[in-house]
Image (cartoon, rainbow over all chains, first blue to last red):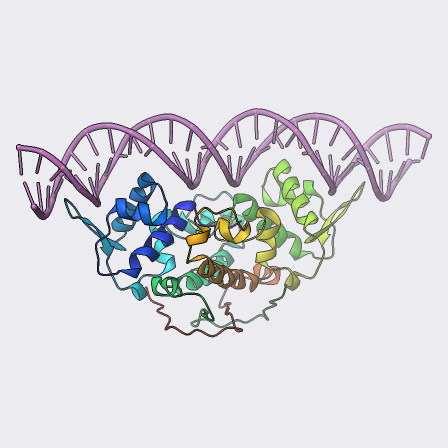
Amino acid sequence: MLRVSKLTDYATVILTHIAHQPDELHAASDITQDTGVALPTVSKVLKLLAKANILISYRGSKGGYALANKPNETNVAEVITAIEGPIGMTECTTSDGTCEQESSCEIKGNWNLINRAVYTALEAVTLADMVAPVRQQAVTVGLPTVTKSNDLNVEN
Amino acid sequence: MLRVSKLTDYATVILTHIAHQPDELHAASDITQDTGVALPTVSKVLKLLAKANILISYRGSKGGYALANKPNETNVAEVITAIEGPIGMTECTTSDGTCEQESSCEIKGNWNLINRAVYTALEAVTLADMVAPVRQQAVTVGLPTVTKSNDLNVEN
DNA sequence: CTAATATAGTACTAAAATAGTCCTATATAA
DNA sequence: TTATATAGGACTATTTTAGTACTATATTAG
Ligand code: FES
Ligand code: FES
């Protein structure tokens, strides 16, 4: 189904919540109450996001988490990477040399191509977009550096 | 990691192989030999692809599989859907009403947005692209029907 | 008509990834 | 010094995925 993990979904919910008050400190316990996600899970997600420098953490009493950057400076690709690791559609793209078919494989380069397209799409959406209500918002993505030689056949 | 399943990867390998001789019939046993993927697995993938009308199957002696359409008429989004089911990045997008946070969730619409962007990217790559060597090939995708109101912040 | 071949469909088992929980250590504030 | 809150890691349970096997059906050839 090509889906993000539940934890990543939680991460977007949590980040969107924090992004509403970007300058305040948010403790894990507060976020639990506001989002309905269980505390241990919230805690886990927050740690991962802090480790990836998407959030800054403050320990001790009155501690908590805050955005490391402005909402429009953190994008969905970064969030997914923080929770799930590097984005790569196939094993071959993330860990080189481990694929059995690699030597006889003609499609590796194409997956890299697809990866870039997907990554660009994810990169184009920031937390600022998540905070804003949907409405007539949109995304346009592209891989501007290269030019297609074959005709594209986009249909469905 | 936002990856496709191994079976989907096999599917692209197999389809790419078949697309080299689009007019011939390919038996599962032949494909096993040519791709190195185990027969039961090849068989499973082929059945799924036939069920999704990406391949046409012919039973009996001298039977086998062939592409249902021209290579440039089958895209990667269809292949993923055939193997893994509907593409949706979160549970919310594929099965409505089952998400606990749904009522208080502000980001559902945004995930739909992201889904569309990713889907468009995947839709833009066809089997014809997979058959062709990579080189300076490229993909440009977009969601032309809507216009972005906020500024997009694409960086990394 | 029969035998051989190849796919259809389904069910099952094993392996891997994910989700979720918990515990101990460390830092901070009052 | 105590209370609070995150850091880090380990662990278990659950779910998903991968892989296999078996029976039924269709087609061709003799
Ligand atoms: S390198 Fe692994 S399938 Fe191509
Ligand atoms: S509807 Fe499920 S997280 Fe938004």
